Image (cartoon, rainbow, N blue to C red; front, side, top):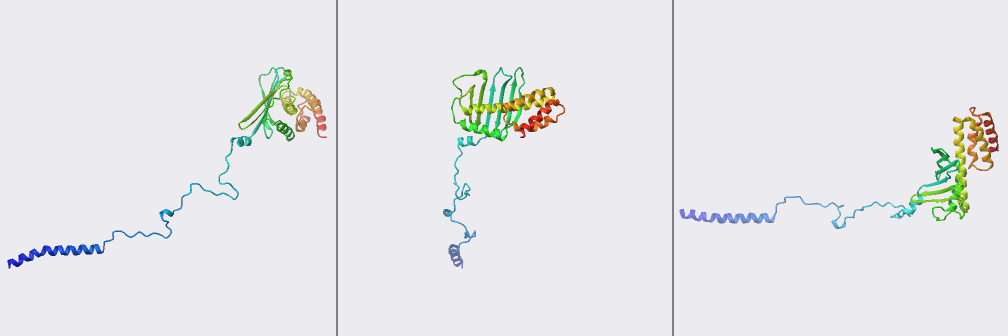
Length: 269
């Protein structure tokens, strides 16, 4: 009996080994799934077929270049606003210094100084279309910014005063100085600016007379009539509103008011 029991115990480990081998074989035949399978969507692209991202949006119209031409410095200068200047200087003249500055539309200012006066007078100016047209034609005739011409004549007339004309557009600037010129366009240009100055100074003097010095009005009206006859003013039609005001200004002497009426009739013919 004891011998059979001993044999049975010897067979038990062998049975355990066989049972373990059978279980291992079943596990290999049907492995346990720890995760769900990955499902690829129909719209997913394979990695090598993904479209490359665009870094710049292109929405060009027909006929439009995808790369517009770069704006050069010269084109920027040509597109920049233009300013014009005129300067007159003669220390011994009654009006010893005049500076006119304006833009392409004719708006700007005039600065002038009189003999024995330390304070400069600064007044706004607004050139009429006719005056601006004449000035523009003369500037264009000179081709001022492109030219290097010296407008000074061989003969010198310093007693007549020194004149400077200037033009600036963007980074391009030029100033020319002379006291007498044989260039017809340059000579006509400074003459036109002097007419602008004479008219602006008269308007200023008359405004002072109407406010503080009414007794100076008759003398100023005499000057105005002389200036109109000699074509010293840039645009006499601009003076019509002022003459209408003078003719009805009771603060002024009657002789000045009547004189304004006579000149007004001549200008309105």
